[in-house]
Image 1: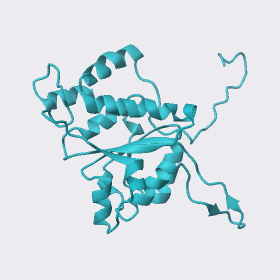
Image 2: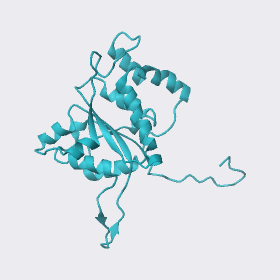
Image 3: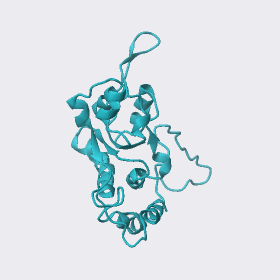
Length: 221
């Protein structure tokens, strides 16, 4: 704490347990003026911001994790919702993809412990495994494994809220893998219709912009 004096050594621990993209850029006021102001009157953006803040509070109230999948057609703004939520935590480097294995997802969940886990493109995950992966994410604990000497290793654990985007929902995706979704799975990663009624894709209100593309570009900036 403070500046190093004389020949005092500064020690910076190498911490691989922090995911890329976490950090501050700009001020809270700038974020409110440039990001939150565009979210006003936009239900999907407000919901997405809520998942990010809720994820940071789970540990404080000893609550379980889970997730939400913004389901809708391509190029309708779902990824913009993800980026709005990620802006609470840091930069786009924080975003992840569903294109991973079960073991890989364990590591990703552990890395994002006590925070938001943004996962893009739900359709990329193996349809035969996705149901069990949803159980695992919400349950907050990985597989029990043995060490080289046969002793049990401590499994990875986490508490996260997933914000997912995809063109398909959990039940539909599982059917392509010839699996039937159980009620417990559907309750743990809940499909949310991404497109609003009488709106522009995920956007209820594009404010004073001429069209949704111009509005989407403003969100990206």
